[in-house]
Image 1: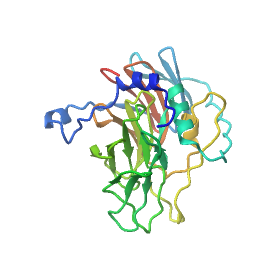
Image 2: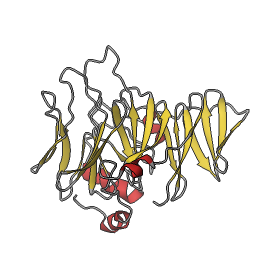
Image 3: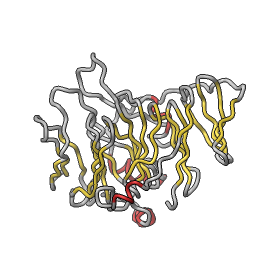
Length: 303
């Protein structure tokens, strides 16, 4: 990738994703994957965390999620006002500049129609004209067959690719298929894959490269005849373009569940009802996540 920050990349490489995954691991290892319990809530729209407490805005008002004992405390405060909508970005995205800014600021790595490729160029998913012909191509380079494709007669969702913060591994999810395919960003060879339990849409990889967030069970409405066109938006200065508020305006198939995949384990570690709302990394081992219908705390043994 052109003009990457080498010192940042080397630092992040130390905690990159494992290549071993459920299909390569033993059955006992697969069964041992912990799944975080969630705490149901009513129409969550936002979450912020500070000093061991996360405050969530729900239709019933503000509630507090106490991390020490994972309890929910009701308050008499009304729900917070929705954020002001960010304007739509009309200029063409420079993939390398966006990637460098993401790495320098430790922002999320979003699913996009195209992502930078190691050594220059970019990776892009090509929609097949027939089932089984979808593929990911590198400009001027190799081809990987995705082994999952869109029905030519069904609306598509173009944001199918995300890149690990190290730049070494990429992820491919083609809605409405359930497959998450990880592949080497240099050779384009599949390194591992898992099948989620519903039609999946990828959202982002966490800044530290530990988690991948996806939504499940999204269905296009009957009137949806054309492909989805997710618009990029201009965030306030210094704000991650894929921060939580951006999820409110991302045009995508409406989801019924949100899943969190631990890329070190290669497996789902939490499933929450409703679409994604918030992802907050508390420290090196604790992450708090919220969907529209619940909040949960993810614990990892190491970053």
